[in-house]
Length: 196
Image (cartoon, rainbow, N blue to C red; front, side, top):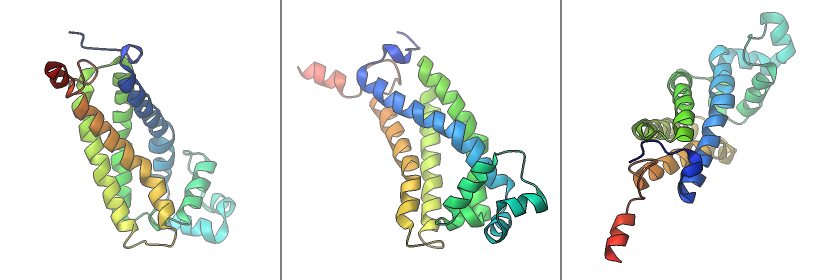
């Protein structure tokens, strides 16, 4: 039995799901973990309050912008913070979820990209672990967002977090349906073949 099945050799269903997952992993490693998340770790809620009152150029003149991330990411996070209080205030619990993203999820995305492209079956358990951790994080974030930081723009917050709910669910379903990950049949396929 082959232990590695490259993406080009997979059946159509797996190939489509795996491409969706790969796009998500690439977006997260390129834009989320080490741009948006880093901004939320290097600038505090007080920094964003200063930016709100005086502008980003005044903040730059008074304190200097961080070397990383670029200025447009700071401005984009500040824009998002206008309807998402946790992004603007950056309480301790929120920053803890960002640290988890930067320290644990970033390396997972890199590893998952390699494993999903090459068809390495060992990625199954780490994928399930990531998906459950991500669902836990997003559930906590949304729970606090809809209680302590509730705004009329709640639907924007839900939409902004929707992919981080749907993709982990898709990944868990993918791993349940294909217990051998990239090799073997979809679960239930053998039973239907036996019955025919």
